[in-house]
Image 1 (cartoon, rainbow, N blue to C red):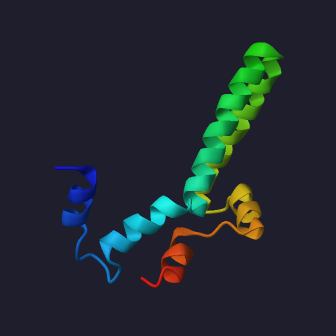
Image 2: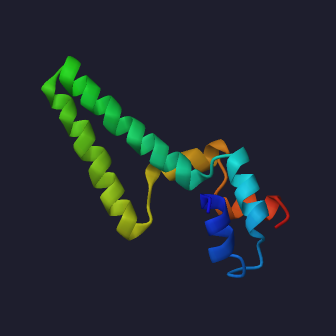
Image 3: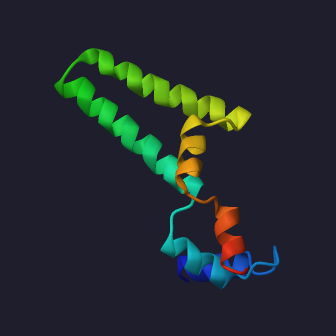
Length: 101
């Protein structure tokens, strides 16, 4: 059984949104939530590279990213999310409503 088949079987009737349209649209554009995760991962890797190649104090950038991820998990406040949303990146909910699901 493929991952898609498992997903379709498990979540077939959980909401009014069809599973196929949800999967299809997620392949076309990254949501705000996924963009934030990608950005955070990139920043951690960048800060580790800068720490290794330039100066040890760049490790504090890694600490800052980790602290922001930790606080946003509890508060829901994410400065990067606000910035990206203003740039036009849509949340998963906005993408699904535009897809006519």
